[in-house]
Length: 140
Image (cartoon, rainbow, N blue to C red; front, side, top):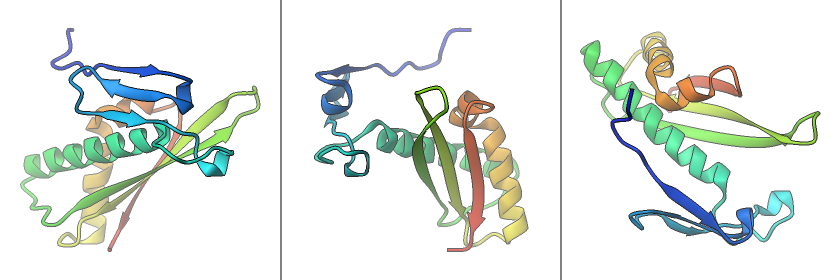
């Protein structure tokens, strides 16, 4: 199956201390290692970009599921925290915590929507079985 859309970006320079840019120029960022990992922190980093993309994609999936179930989401939001940790093989692994807020929907119903969104979100499907992802519904 051919993709309905393909995004394209290039990284140049010294990887995490370089620059990344999309082919259309809409994203053009200086990259830097976070201070927590011993870097300057004077730029964005891949984990921030992944968190932003995952949050937006998951929120879109949540909206799709809600429309299908005829549920009004109101002032909903999705936050993503992406962590990076060393693994036992000398490399690194990611973990993701997604926080879903749907103030106008009862907690159990909101959790059911979030769980359904986790099944259709392309990011969730891409990482399922590869990294730990926690989906939590909070009331604020």
